Image 1 (cartoon, rainbow, N blue to C red):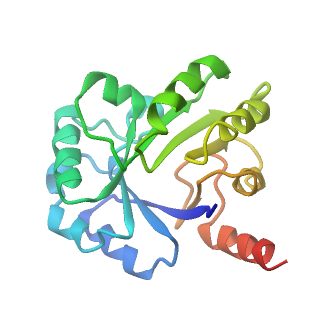
Image 2: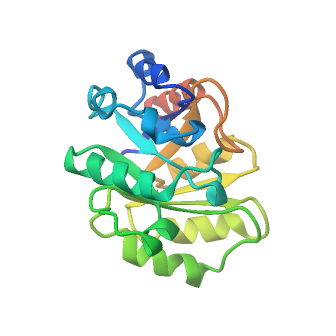
Length: 209
């Protein structure tokens, strides 16, 4: 199964969206939570790169930078769904707001203690069916490696991300079957990322050996 390389790009101004043109990765994640408000976004700018982007409006409780009004977020995601744009939405957000997630990425982030396999596997069973991927990010504490490996055995539709660990671990989990591996374009958008160009180089070497 192919692992998709995602280049994560902070969008601090609508002008940053145009940087997608120069990024050579499978996908470019546009982190819109780096902005103060989604009202500055013209959806037509996103549609120019419809087949290349993943739109992420990360909640501050799950690693987001700025607080984004949840109704604004919901409304934009629904518009993106109608236009067939890939986005990443938190499982916790879906508990509060009705947002379509079929064919999209559903994610869960655990920055504190390590969650139980039972807790995360319940989400995996729900969100690996019909989605593009179910993505789990956990802090590198306790028996986190075994947790992430166990999740990967559940489905080929799972992506796992260790945080606050050696960035090479993300490559290791890609080899083990993670559907997505994230790197940064300019600066890390999550602890434990390496440059997406480094990821491409390493993955290229591994695939040719």
